[in-house]
Image: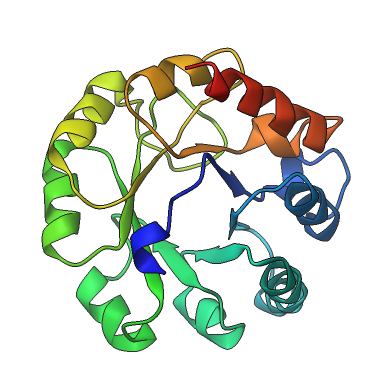
Length: 211
């Protein structure tokens, strides 16, 4: 399965504060109905028990639909709900320690912001990397400055593990990201904040199909 982790066009990420009053359960249901194949659960502010209960439900939904389910940052939560993977940042535990905890079957994704970090991620055994933020974004509170399309160009040419482009990507600039070689692209507020999530995903796919 790991070879095909990101063998899809759109990588969805939850963000309930931008979901216009809809729960993550409702939003994920709409993502699944739209044919999304990989979903990351990212909720920084919620209490652990709330996140656990929510993820138990989301794990069941994603499993039933054959959707890859990734938990952001939280290794023990990923293990507790038997998620497919965990996504970590540069300030989190080293990949080697996470691998020790989760075993060989769980996917480990790592956010990267520079060529050095990408090369290091490959060397240390990441299954895939996040590449970004491509454009400025306010979705994450502690995000670094936008790295631009140059870093994406580097990864396309030099990195041989799967990657997902992320950060400030919207309907109006997704074409440009695809044109630079990104096959899998993550959007957060553009999807969770859409009035019609399925319609938004269909629009994005129509644009991606035209590249």
